[in-house]
Length: 262
Ligand SMILES: Nc1ncnc2c1ncn2[C@@H]1O[C@H](COP(=O)(O)OP(=O)(O)OP(=O)(O)O)[C@@H](O)[C@H]1O
Image 1 (cartoon, rainbow, N blue to C red):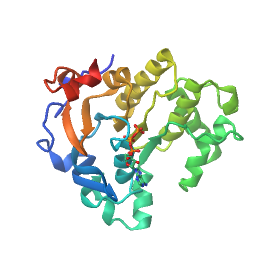
Image 2 (spheres, rainbow, N blue to C red):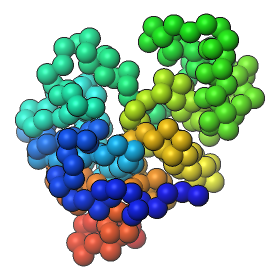
Image 3 (cartoon, helix red, strand yellow):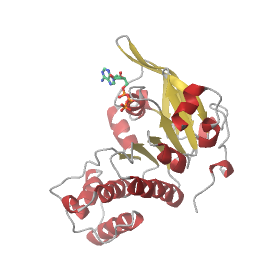
Image 4 (cartoon, helix red, strand yellow):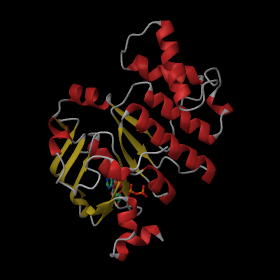
């Protein structure tokens, strides 16, 4: 049974009105321009522990720029971004790497290594993070991550043998093996058929429940938004134009907001 977002603490808190000190991601008045292209003008948003927040916005509205600012790949011109209590812009390189290791990423491309088995794909991030594990412990971690995504019997397969939905699940397993505290999902259902897309949506919820992770999800897919979001933030005009539950935004009087829900 999926959690009812309305029963979650702070689910109805307005932006900036929740217990800000506990937010796992805190964006305050973030601005980012490229020349005269003012992509982010004054964007503020909180992601609370254990909460799934979907950022919705038209193509070119700045969703990717926002994610890049959060993970420190782009530096905002103004404002402040705090992730797990750290001011991202002020972190030295090593500390930023350590912070990124506490985040999970699920990109559209899945980025699996085609020449490696599923097991090797999952072991790769563990070894890259210098996390020392014995062989049997590694095998346990791989198996648990695969079981978490419902693909417990695929460790010896090559990515090419898997369907698009299965590859997406393996990519999520590879993220889960590092036990991220926050997961960033970039268009998690793009390119999948509707049935497989819904399976991924449910998996996103299962992961949230099992590991109590927070997530920031970029999505255009309104079924994905409805099924995964505790809160939805609409990015328009470079700011958080509207924020609320799916139902609240669906009934929003501003046509600019509810046009997404038609
Ligand atoms: N490195 C960059 N240099 C210059 N302009 C950039 C750069 N990155 C993004 N932009 C511009 O910022 C704007 C927002 O781009 P962004 O990729 O964030 O949009 P998006 O909302 O993610 O779009 P989509 O849904 O189509 O992926 C676009 O006008 C884009 O051209």
